[in-house]
Amino acid sequence: MCSSDLLAPALAAAAPPQRVEIAFELARNGSAVAEVSQRLEHDGRSYRLQETWRGKGIYALRGEAVRTSAGAVVADGLRPAIYEDRRSGRDALQASFDPASKAPTLQRQDRLSFLWTFAFAPPKDLVSVGVNDGKHVATYAYQPAGRERLKTPAGEFDTLKLVKRRNDPQERATELWLAADRGNLPVKLVIVEKDGTRIEQVAVRIAAP
Image 1 (tube, rainbow, N blue to C red):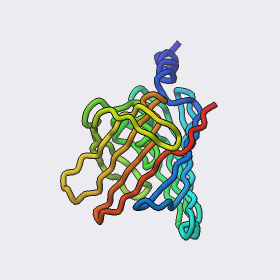
Image 2: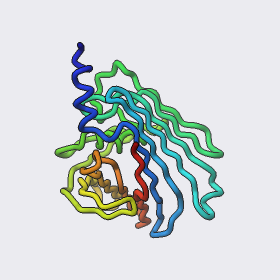
Image 3: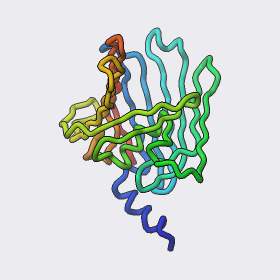
């Protein structure tokens, strides 16, 4: 039996459910603009993520957006192999990752995997994350900001809060809450843009067999 065979059951025990779907409401300055669904499937060795974005009201005119990420589950998170971003009226974006790369796991993330890699391996200190969106690679720094009891339409959770470090107060602010008592599922995301626009993505339903 190889070491990865021994590792997989331990990872599965500490990781999110092998199949889970989270429905979110996306709001802009307090007004709902979209319904977002994220579905994860993994077996402790490989994973597949899919996110579907559907606008509400006038935002429905923008059509649908679907992002997918697939790759390996490793001891320190998710290692994507392929990422795709398809949106109505736009050319599809795609990013491929070299499976033989020696780059640290957190330095080879995509726009979908990097939030979920924290669910598999929550950071204990400040970490640097490289995120590929199919066009560019951006680097962010996240750090734990303590525990918080959080109420959402999907339930009340004991959460670990993560905050993106900003070198300039004018930079976009990002905060993420992981439900520590539900396999570290991401249940809330808040982004505050440079102009003060507040974007909130909050879980309204969690379905896990």
